[in-house]
Image 1 (cartoon, helix red, strand yellow):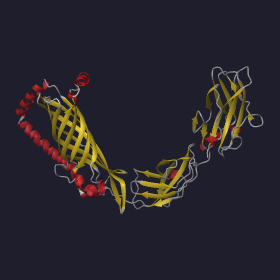
Image 2 (cartoon, one colour):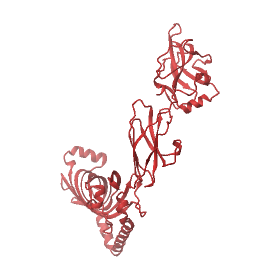
Image 3 (cartoon, one colour):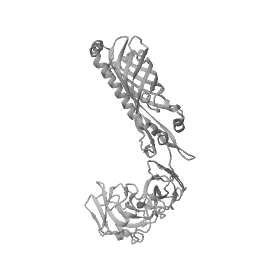
Image 4 (cartoon, helix red, strand yellow):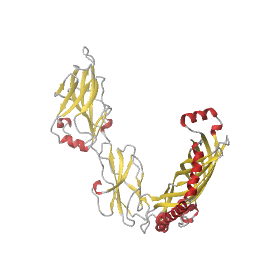
Length: 505
């Protein structure tokens, strides 16, 4: 145990601060300076005096009586300093604002070196009042914590090629280790200290289970796992006995099946998109006169449009088509997930009956799945992150209704995806990386309640202050397909039901 609880240092209202002229692990204004084994060893090897500077308040100069040095073991109680209990210190200087006490390092350590935990106090006595005999004391306290934590045993280790889970033996609340470090080395290569190990990470205090992700281990190659403690003073304890374990190869969805689509998914999607753009370009070139006339006719009413912008934020269920695939649902289950999203529209043509605009938006969802190693299932061994983004046209009803608004949307859909495991992005056995983009199309229909119709006064304030014409609370149904236009067996398209809030400007 550390010497931190031997004695609470005395404080005086005549002393505003204390400066310690030596290397410390940490300094706390309430408990003093903490020295671990490294700092104590530096103090033991030091030749120059150690100075303790007591900064006095404005009315304290001239009140110094004595300066003392004493030490206490962790179990010792309070002590009253006099010539029989404490060592008087003579090398004391004052400049009217500070009192500086200088102590030889060996005297400070009381000849005991750094072999045991204890507290060392430099105390000054001051007169409370210049014309009285009452004494007030202030302590500069050194907490020498040089005893490292004891060893801790490992009960079990579960290791795969990309994560390690360690179960440690229980420890008592009195154990002074602030954290426990875990590391590994190839089995049979005995480790003499932590520097020879590959560190996995740390857990705090009395924690018994530690799980470490983002690990790269070779399946089938045994390793020895060690644990060692570190206390509040930075002292590291001895290594535990090694625990040998052979990492297994945990197979996630992409490693098992995703690579079947990896070779063609991105290429086919790009080819399909390129073909679509070529066709669109040909049509536009051939029909440029009709297109120019149409744009002009649309922009004329747009100049007088009451609403030119729409912003929507939504949350809803996400049930991709791929969840119905038996192999995918084995890893990720069949339940719907939550998805959040937002989009914006610019209405380039509008009348009192409705408007047409360009719409773009992005959504996000992440699902956790399992991985398998033989008969063992790892619950969080897989992950899939999706960022569906769409670009298309939106038709929005006009202000003909005080209470309701209707909207439909259709356009191109791009779904960036990433399959992951505890070690990062999943990579299949043939080297295909589990990330890319699936292309497709999306459409939606939205029914909204116009909240501005309930409170015209508040609606007027929103319009004048923020240019918000309508506030819409909506329910929306989405349907999409994202399988590279039929070229990929992975389809991230889905049927969705969303609720959200929209604003028109």
